[in-house]
Length: 309
Image (tube, rainbow, N blue to C red; front, side, top):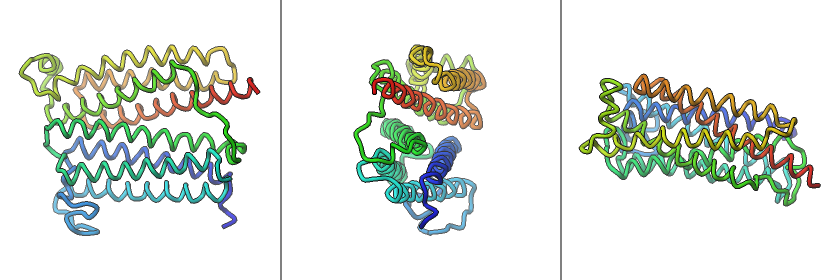
């Protein structure tokens, strides 16, 4: 297979990441439309069939998500196979591609658990809230591995065996990373609350957030905007580490631009009481911000390593 070159692997990695992001957004659409039980409690089959004959739109939505998830799994597996063809054993390209396989298999297992345990559709339990929070953490893990693979695939030395450090050492970066994980989890729970307990108006929704008798999913919605403000402040502080390096100015500008845009989208999502389409846009930009933040850390460490050597 002579066409399996490092140059094409770099392009393929970006395709794999882009497609996986679309699958993630479609998964949010499954939750927002209450279509998680569209294939019944069967997995991986849909209503006991390989290719179902859908009688309702929810089945179409859920089956499309499962089919696209399967394609994403095949892309990640093929990326791992490709990495083994073009990179040396012990190289970062091989290591990260292997982590990507682990992450997407775990993603599939978590998705299957939601279906088999019936933590879908109109379920309002604590177990569902915990499960979607854990699902979100693993989704970010998957995005981080695929983004890192795209980053590494552009550097010839990352195809060679070695112990080059790629992750940043700055404490502020890891504080921001940890806060973003909690921000993502709170966002997933807030989105579930918006789906199961939609507000009739902005004021009534705010009143429900603080009413003692409200469902816990409603009362937890306020956590997300608080964490969002905290993370924005941390991200701006982290960007100051990139300010003095001209080679990273474009990285810093892209990160700040995505951050500001995402904050505005989140604010609009709150004002409009989280319509389904805006929830998807909000999630997509959140994933892009996470990618920008994570890659800025890799770029900073790569620049720092070159200076030290």
